[in-house]
Length: 344
Image (cartoon, rainbow, N blue to C red):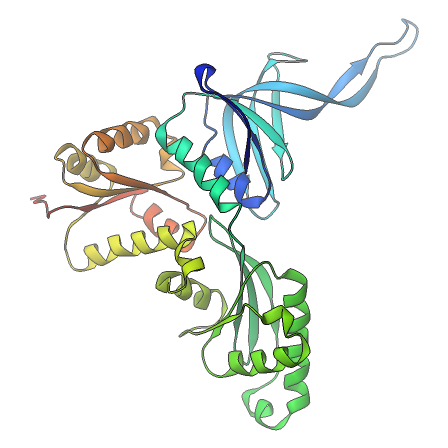
């Protein structure tokens, strides 16, 4: 993400979306009742003489939209902003902005600290290399790309070979590894983490090094209990590498897991809106966790403001990844406390 223009006096910031992660960050910035400006396509009637019917054509126009809803579609690489046109043609009509990478958006809103921090984070993240995961065992190879909001599941290749055949049929094994290597070459973005249980990861690495040494010069090999996406999530929970530790999804995963550890041992925790609000009011909250869905509600915004006054840290958690879904199951809000509270 790049900041193209900033006028804090008039609460106006213009941003350029450079990658898929930027669209997700924008989803967490733009809210209901914000005013946003962007170029878009809209059907406009073309005036002709009175004897001929008017023609309708799609023209590129700049519109100002008063936001009613925002949707992030990680699988279609799009951010959809719905709203009512306030500035431009057909004022008063509904319109949807479909934003993708390369688009620019001007936002006028009441900027909160967490909105501005989100922009700083997006600008910083743009300079960080994207990470590619290859989770492999003798049955399947799963590919993923580490995004700020979670892991994008790129797909999988199945070997269709039994364990006994792997011991006796080297050609079939190499054929599988060759397909995996070709796919990895096509999707690779930044450093590669090759992970999984057993010996398949080491065997693939040795095979691939002979064919494409340059491709794997920055590769890291990690053992996990599971293959597939479960193995990738295991790496995120461990957070043992600098470039994984620093990724937002890894930070979010670790803090949510810490909350669940406190719950498991009946320690310093609170969850559910009323319980957490009571803990905030008591000054007991060390770290407040709110999902990206709940934070759009006014009551959650007010809770964040109260948490700031009591010097509590807070983090907005994406519901795209596994840990975010777990927090959503607790009502979308939880807290790690400074001390244990008595709820009896």
